[in-house]
Amino acid sequence: HFSKRRKLHLELGRFGEDTAIRLLRSKGYHILTRNFRLKSGELDIVALDGTTVVFAEVKTRRQNRFSPRSNLSFRQLKRNFATGKLYLSLFGIPEAKRRYDLIEVTVDRKRYRRIVKLTHSLNILMQC
Image (cartoon, rainbow, N blue to C red):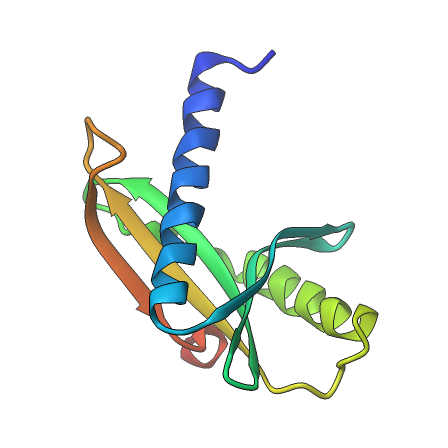
């Protein structure tokens, strides 16, 4: 049994990922996988943008003074990079062009299904 707080946290994350998938589809991306898990880590969304494989990390947060990006650590970026390489290797496409994006979903403090801000940052590894 999950605590009520944990359940709300998981619902918020799920809502953020659903929102991110709708955003990517509206931009013409083809969704390949969602919540891909390996021992090395998890990839929230794997999609195709033309011929580029995109590994999208989704961060969702209730509106406050911090951005969802503030929950993204360098350690997590390293895990995503390693898991992305393994994903490509497992599916036989190790030389594919790839990109690591961040989608930030900020929702209303009281009504989490009301989106306040939605940001899609391309190639976040190049920004670090």
